Amino acid sequence: KTYTVGNYLATRFEQIGLKHYFMVPGDYNLVLLDQLLWNKNMQQIGCCNELNAAYAAEGYARVNGVGAVITTFNVGAFSAFNGIAGANAESLPVIFVSSSYNTNDPSANHLLHHTIGSHDFAYQYDAFRQVTCASVRILHAENAPSLIDHAIVTALRERKPAYIEIACNLSDAPCPKPAPFEILLVSQPSNRQALDAAVETAAALLNNAKKPLLLAGVHLRAFKAIDAFRELAEALGCAVAVMPNAKGFFPENHPQYIGIYWGGVSSPGCESIVDWADMTLVAGPMFTDYTTVGWTALPHREQMIKADPRQVQFPQADYTEIALAEFLSALAKQVRKNDKTLIQFRREVRKAHEETEAHVAIENAPLTRVELCRQIQNDIDEKTTLLVETGDAWFNGMSMHLPGGARFEIEMQWGSIGWAVPATFGYAMGLERDRRLVSLIGDGSFQLTAQEVANMIRYGQHNLIFIVNNRGYVIESEIHDGPYNYIKNWDYAGLISVFNAEDGHGLGLKATTGKELADAIKKARKHRGGPVLIECQIAHDDCSPQLLKWGTKVAVANERPPRQA
Ligand SMILES: C/C(NCc1cnc(C)nc1N)=C(/S)[C@H](O)COP(=O)(O)OP(=O)(O)O
Image 1 (spheres, rainbow, N blue to C red):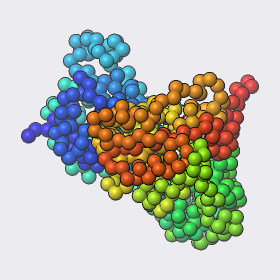
Image 2: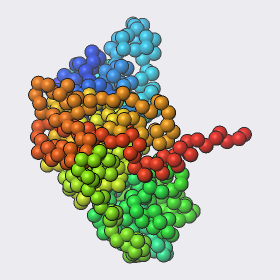
Image 3: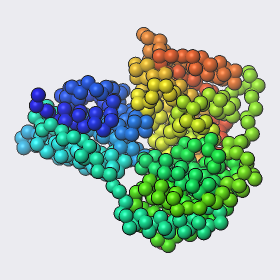
Image 4: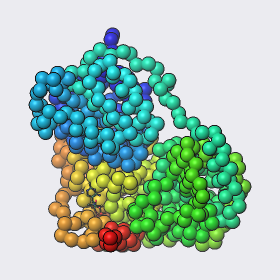
């Protein structure tokens, strides 16, 4: 059998570890979808729209390492754009494939449907070049192998999305058989001299420090440095804090763990220890207005070693061409034990998350945020991934304790509401059979992409989704309120019967009191074969104290007046 361009792509998809890929059909991509179905080792998953398909591929990449989404030209692609740019922000390799026009059309001076009606057919490619690490257009079948391989290999190396545009009349064009994929996977080792020099400098700084501390950053997972970071932590024996979007990248039941460092909304006792340290090695951070709480929580450069994916920054020097995992694990062999920061933490807080156990609410009292969080905390076990949407869910999830083995997913860098439902769908598609997914989503965010719950029913995913119905956009209200922060209320639990009248594998429950919530969680735990939505009704102004504190500081940062010329 001769290969086709579509078969080539399907073979590469399987070789990079895809068992599923997401799509919405369109006349430009139907033949390509057939060519992909040729590979029976992968499942083609339809989504309600291309934005959801892109978010699903992003969620899938979180659990599977890489994701893929196929759309039709323009109308599909531009809907997916937000999800692909988000994958870039989150450092997730999502392969985005858009079918495009027939190669005979430009020379025939044709105008085409699904375009803005001009003779320029490159503007989609130009747009996606801005948000991907590699973007290619396949306009001749003989170029397909090298272009497809370039896009995929670059995405895997850079941990960023890549763009592949395939002319619709080339999807089944003959194409050489793919070479073995392994020969393409060139890792990027460090420059040996730079690595040695950086390790020597870092070891001297840490060994001469009186109060060294480690801080985990968001890029640890993307650049496969979680184990190396733990190796360094256990060699140094110091206190270990994590930044909010790195929650779960260092075990929260580890004896050296001291909590989330997030400025004024850090875990109890954590901020003072991080501020007290005289040398902090921060691994893979992104210091932004949100993670530094409006620039109020940024370690000083003269007391910081900032280890990024490909470079290490010291108080007086920058070393480049250094792979993060190699640097951390080489450094682990050169540091001496110093647990002063951990001892000091223990003087204040014996163990991270030792916060006062929230008291059980009066059974029939109106449900509160504190009671909701208390019950979700009790529902999280070592097999659970807790996925939180942008909203007060960030703060509610952040303060929950992860038992050993539990995982946490957040989209803090991109922060696009509506991400969580399709990301839950995509994440669950790639999740190990014996694990469970619990999502915490506000009513406002839920309204953007709610329809993807229907596909959770279609594929029998037993996800548990807590919809926190506080009647509107409370994060926005706390940052700066106005009439625009209030929305039409839905019967969220009732959606399940709308989505699955015929098969009944979903379950929609409402909780307005602590008792109703406890009963709903019990039912959810027993439910099989489909998702469970629990609509938790709480008061509009019942938000976390962390949100109030954080929102005020972020609002101040937003409202800085233009610098006077
Ligand atoms: C509107 C917006 N952000 C602005 C925004 C608007 N559009 C997109 C795509 N992404 C965004 N972050 C946000 S955080 C809402 O408060 C979310 O409301 P909800 O889901 O109900 O959560 P909370 O009530 O806990 O805030």
